[in-house]
Length: 273
Image (tube, rainbow, N blue to C red):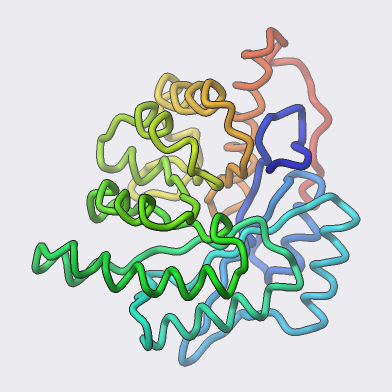
């Protein structure tokens, strides 16, 4: 599954496409030497769209080849995958648009508003199953379609979908921390289906620097990934320069210490130009 990882890591270390306060393409150019993967966070709203045009896609493909980068594509948030729903059609459009990039994974949230109100998870899963099958056919390889656990509802409700479909999983560790759950246990249970991991700290809200994560908690999660021989993408899902580079440094320090290296030794820095 994995091609190469920076700094000797077993997994591919990634960022979001909005670390710098700029558009997607400038971010990828500036991050290309610091990461193995970039999560393209795409929106198409009534009054705003950041979907890349043909020229941008061509340059993203060129940067991927030049720097051995992969891309993960985050489909629109809170996607309702019931057949015929407008948000499902939007997902089809984005998959077709980004196919030229050969994404490592497509990550999707599933909107569970109705079962949270009614408690009817079976009906929700039945409609979700049909939509996920549609998207899997669009992608062509179902393991690249990764459903993500959210902090608003029990992630175990996703498990029957994994039993019915060969889709992948995006394990968001920050969301598990928000729920106060056993992260190493979840990693062990889901390792065989996990293609993407999201990692971020919790301050007043989530998606902050890992400096906000207790070291023992962070190391326990990274150790569990290592024990599970995880070889997918680990995205530092944060959205500022400071949050990204401080988080990246902590992951590299963990890796150095695990391999008996001096975690405080000087390393070649990535110029934040």
